[in-house]
Length: 441
Ligand SMILES: Cc1cc2nc3c(=O)[nH]c(=O)nc-3n(C[C@H](O)[C@H](O)[C@H](O)COP(=O)(O)OP(=O)(O)OC[C@H]3O[C@@H](n4cnc5c(N)ncnc54)[C@H](O)[C@@H]3O)c2cc1C
Image (cartoon, rainbow, N blue to C red; front, side, top):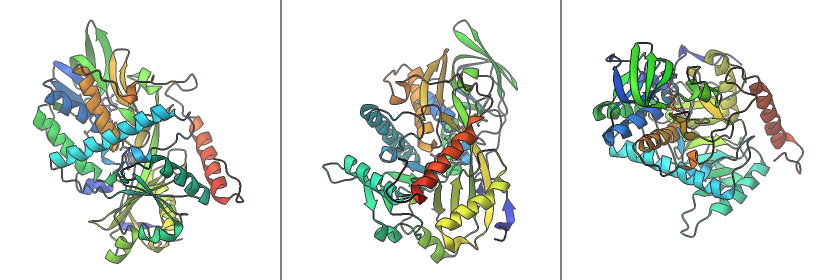
């Protein structure tokens, strides 16, 4: 196959064509602040917005230009509790805990929807649902069982099974064996959503200090003494919201979150008819593979945005782009001639129980562990951790269990990732291609 790169190809997030995160005004690091928030992604900004609303002064510190972490790099796919996945390796939660986590995911979805709409954040918010493709006939059976479990009496079913014969109404592809539609799902332009949160944060009175990496942190009586790249600061409370970029300065968190790169590409603008046919209902898409693929149309610009993880060692977005293009063409053969204009990567944070966490550890507040899906979740965690500091101790399901660590991971070498990746890939292969009647699920 010829190489898939457009002549205008750039190794940077497509979303930055609309909003490229940069510092307009470089604020001095204050000598003192009531709450220091480390990390200016969705979680950090949402925490600062909520603190300001509650009348608590806060300063947000970021190591680089605020927004250049994962928060302006995602696919912008958002989903409520109806689509929660069974953990891949960790123990599945009990039915009761599963329901509590689902309720939190719904609350996160509602918070995001409300934040965007109430503040008129112009970010292409499209609550048009998600189609999850069944990777194999067996996976469709598992979806059927799950949909039957969550039917409710109101007839307002959160999930709807799509039979293979009906699939073309959802996606112009016969790659999947049917699937299901999750109603409570949306997509947005993640960088424009970030820009909206940043405006809210600044309008609320919180200061964002760019290029002020936290380099050392020391307890000093009831307060914290921070050393940043641009000077010291004393804070009453500290929130760690560094997710997939958590570093050595907080080893107690670094050993609890495993950074993992996710990769994405954007195609050149597509002919209008082709673009419409890819997603007739403007849904977003994922599938039931363990190594997940996620994609959606950016309908205004008629581009397909496609992401996955194909290799388990870190390679450049330009090296990854042809592999992603090949996966995209498997799903949509009509895109074989469509070239890639942008490819990019960013860090997500995995946790050992595959759940997000918030709470307090060794005196530090934290909101961490998006596990690959954090547009709604990290916004929600940021808001919750702020409320906790303000004295609202109504406990979220995300803080009811300890934040796990393992003797096998100190936060440095991620030797186990290729092993896990190959294991998951083998199981995916088996589920799709093994003789019928056998499955690894
Ligand atoms: C390619 C890709 C695709 C994705 N797709 C989706 C999707 O479709 N849907 C979805 O829901 N989620 C998706 N995600 C995940 C989502 O983007 C993240 O979960 C979310 O943005 C995390 O927000 P955050 O605020 O927790 O962290 P981030 O936005 O990553 O911010 C963390 C910040 O901490 C800062 N920091 C680190 N260390 C320090 C320090 N010592 N001092 C000061 N600052 C520090 C970093 O500079 C960074 O800005 C995707 C992620 C990637 C990378």
